[in-house]
Every structure is written in structure tokens, then in C-alpha cells.
Length: 66
Image (cartoon, rainbow, N blue to C red):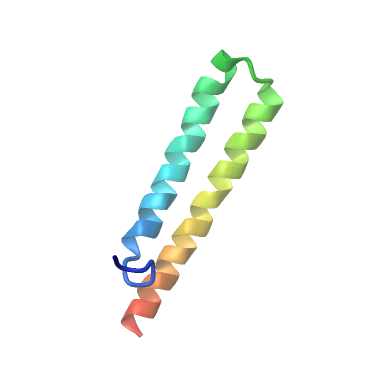
């Protein structure tokens, strides 16, 4: 099984998953009865993981080339 350094596409899939999960939390959260402030905060934290995963993907690509 390749490590994340050998397969940067995993980081990009993780980024996409974080973005989709953030939208799902924003869409489904109110129907579950959570307060709007908590929903927004949770979605924001999940959404902040997406750029981090993108940066790790770029780093993995650079390590792969070098």
C-alpha cells in the first residue's frame, strides 16, 4: 500500500471529502435539531481541513518529483 508521499491523490480526495462533508453538515444539521451556531462552527472546522489537505497534496507531489 503506497504511503501518502507516494500517492498525492489521496490528499486531494481527502480535500474533496472535507468540502462535501462541510456542505452536508450545513444542510442536514438544522433538521437534526442542532443550534445554528454549532452547525456553522462545525462546518467551518471541517471546511478548514480542506486547504490543509490541498497543501499536503502539493507537498507530496513536490516530494515525489524531487
